[in-house]
Amino acid sequence: MGLRFPNHIGQAAGLDKNGRFPGISSALGFGHIEVGTVTPGGQPGNERPRLFRYPKINALVNRMGFNNKGSKALADYVSSVYPKPERMSPLGINIGKSKGTPLHEAIDDYLSAFTDVVDQADYVALNISSPNTPDLRKLHRREYLEPLLSEIKSHNAAWAKKKGCKPVPCLLKISPDEGYRSIENIVDLAVEHSFDGIIATNTSARITQGGYGRLEKGGLSGMPIEKSSNRIIRFISRVTDNRLPIIGVGGVFDNDSATRKLDAGASLLQLYTSFVYNGPSFPSQLANSLAYRKMRWS
Ligand SMILES: Cc1cc2nc3c(=O)[nH]c(=O)nc-3n(C[C@H](O)[C@H](O)[C@H](O)COP(=O)(O)O)c2cc1C
Image (cartoon, rainbow, N blue to C red; front, side, top):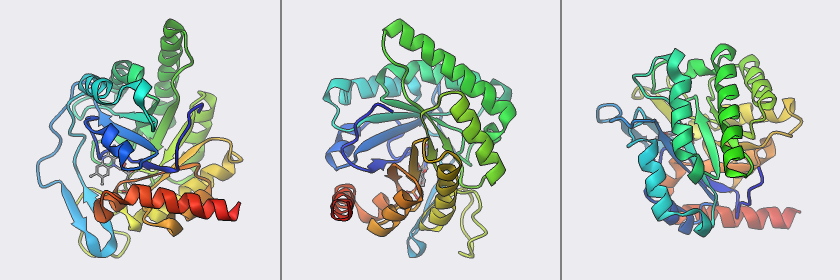
């Protein structure tokens, strides 16, 4: 992607929805920081309670529903608290569609958010995979995804031409609940439209299938989704001959689970749930132990 990452461990989207503290995340040791998801106008999200802890299974369930202050506000915050020239860790900006926008107008939301954030982003992530925005995951289908990727690509090219620079790297964040045929389709489209990578995966909506008893409605994250996330990473890596960068996310909890994701084909990792349970010293601890382990093995 033409970016330099100081380590493998990034902050997953959703932790800093409005881009308020990327400098602090970088100081805690995150080697890249993905802020958002933001939508063009901002929105309040779902009613509380909307975030639930399940410490016995190292999991969270959330149905936040893209609570955010909007893509313009995020770009403003980020430009003041984490300006481009002072960045130690690359900054990804994750964008989505508003709850009230019908699916056939979703492209307008992505384009408008893209235009707001592109100047500030080291990469842009299109989130088509949150289970908490009605119909959002239908964007995995070719009929919606094809025009979306094509429009983003041409906006990106026009932006780059105007600025006299390269287009910003664009990644697609996908769901762990997709079948192989759908993933193959998505990967084909991503390659065809020169997307720079895939972020695999978001939370799972299959909360009843793990035998964990009664869980709240929403997206399941943490240890229970590690296997499905790795299954998707392995598949993407195989069908692309490992040529499309993959950011692996979902159940990274320690050195072993991080190594399993890298072995499955991820080039970079992100985490959210393990940060909630393990606290602020965790990102640098994990990044260091991973670097040490890789050094010893290489
Ligand atoms: C409370 C919460 C909010 C989240 N919000 C977003 C979001 O706004 N956009 C997004 O792409 N992913 C969001 N995610 C998903 C995470 O970025 C990540 O993909 C998922 O939690 C799996 O990683 P983990 O097992 O390390 O938590 C959210 C996750 C949680 C737990």
